Image 1 (cartoon, helix red, strand yellow):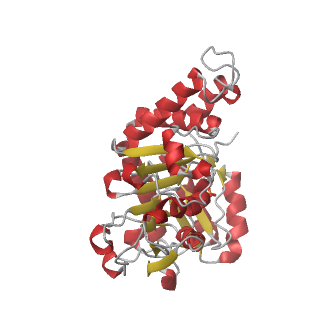
Image 2 (cartoon, rainbow, N blue to C red):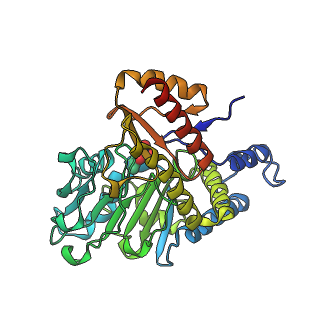
Image 3 (cartoon, rainbow, N blue to C red):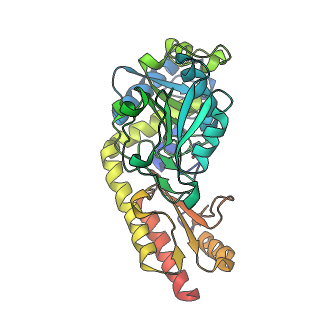
Amino acid sequence: MTHIYNFSAGPAVLPKEVLKQAAEEMLDWHGSGMSVMEMSHRGKEFISIYEAAERDFRELLGVPANYKILFLQGGGLGENAIVPMNLVGRMAQPATVDFIQTGSWSTKSLKEARKYCDVNIAASSENVRFTQIPPREAWKLSKNAAYVHICTNETIDGVEFQFTPDVAADTGNAPLVADMSSHILSRMVDVSKYGVIFAGAQKNIGPAGVTIVVVREDLIGQALPICPSAFDWKLVAENNSMYNTPPTYGIYIAGLVFKWLKKQGGVEEMEKRNIAKAELLYTYLDSTGFYLNKVARDCRSRMNIPFYLKDESLNDTFLAGAKERGLLQLKGHKSVGGMRASIYNAMPIEGVQVLVDYMKDFEKKHG
Ligand code: PMP
């Protein structure tokens, strides 16, 4: 059988070793006689799985002791409501929240936030079709913002922050909130620069259904009265993410991924590999007029690389040929068309090389 490389944007490729281990442990986890799926979340077996996952994630991302790590449900879109419900209550009402609009996901976030607060779009790259991140100097932040929201990697548009913005001085010390769903654990992050980091698991962490929230402790405890209890960070934190039943199996798989990441050399090593993988593909894209990537060079994502065939009538032929070579799920998001290669942590550089080789062959044949 042809070796398969899966370029899906998410749910996405997971390390083979992790899937194998999960398969081996499926019916009987460590001699317990139970599948992890069958365990009470309050039993000692699952608590040990949970604690190891929390500890390993804290170590991998370098989360300081004054931050809580919460394992929730609701996904990235759920957090678009959960974040304002937890953060705007600290301010006089109606509170204002600043958004940096850099693509489809930050746009969804700001539309949702409008249900809970006034939204100030402090900077936007919509006028250049989200091919850039507006430079920090151009942001028009509010004096008294409840928080500043950024999406540090736009999965659809393929732009990624290559800097950590300092917003405190211009906003009366507003915390920075980052949606890191599609690049968490792919690069080093100084967590202390953020008030809140959130990420859906289904790209770099594990199966869909787990959402990780990293939140500075002083931001917890002033949720709006309308906030559902299961999403009130105070209740969730006080109960070690077990106020309600957490997504136990997803947390278990995430824990295996964290162990795998540590074995690879941690986030520092993944970042090196991710730079090399992205360079391989971008270097080829830059060398040809047959394919196009529209993103400004200093804003290019290392994780999600959208590209277009100059002759779009060849799209279906390109995708069919890719599939024959075992290169799956390269079709771009329906809102932007074209192609997209998502090359998360679990994608080896060999997969990117096979893709580039295929793209070259396709160009030779059709160029
Ligand atoms: N934010 C980003 C950056 C994403 O890529 C996605 C999903 N692709 C979401 C939010 C939404 O996540 P979910 O579907 O888990 O709600």
